[in-house]
Image (tube, rainbow, N blue to C red; front, side, top):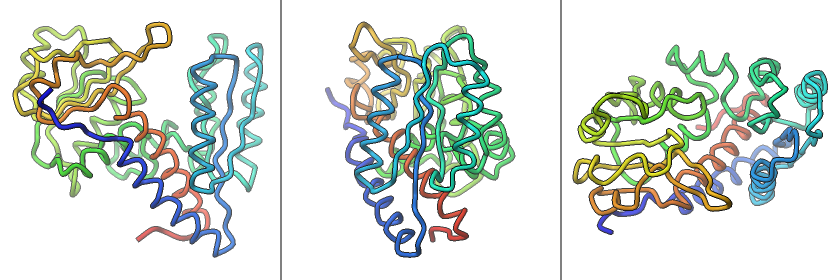
Length: 289
């Protein structure tokens, strides 16, 4: 393995320490910070993820509230839970854990969230603000990827970034965020997917590759230009084993690469805390310098 690791665990710990300082300043001003979550059904992966978020909250002294609904919860039940967190002054921001059971309409649920309390950054209003070039709440994984690159000294400005995947949670918002004409961003972005003809040649042209298709081993070492930066953001499971969109041999070619575990995942959770504390700051009329 020749590549250096993009250490998401280390950077996430730095971000959590900064969040903790902001929480303490808010508490000194009489403002409490709380993160809510709505968990519907009995999917083990979703339950584990919500538990991890609760532990993250405890580590930075953010209060955590989880609303649990059974797998047979109706659309009205879920919308009522959303409204309860919208109205709860102790909840600065919250998420609805996805995926929802198949009988529910996730779009209607996302629309029901107060955009100011949208911790995931997936509300259509917040995605629209991002598309208009004035991001307020940014989806956690794209924000985490950008932060991970910044803190390893990797320059986006003027770089060719290829995003493999066009999903709502990573590919689409990342492509907009990275291309914004702002300091630290301003990349030339190409968005592709697994069915694009000659995918390998497009990926090989990139300075930075983000694989976010959820297709195990999709991006191989032969597809990567030597010295490129490669981020594995798409994951899937084989039993309980977490699989990356990156083949193992990518590390033999790239200059920087994320590890299979400890790369993007910790950054996603860290940025959820950032979105939560920023929601509390906005509500209190304070902004972080």
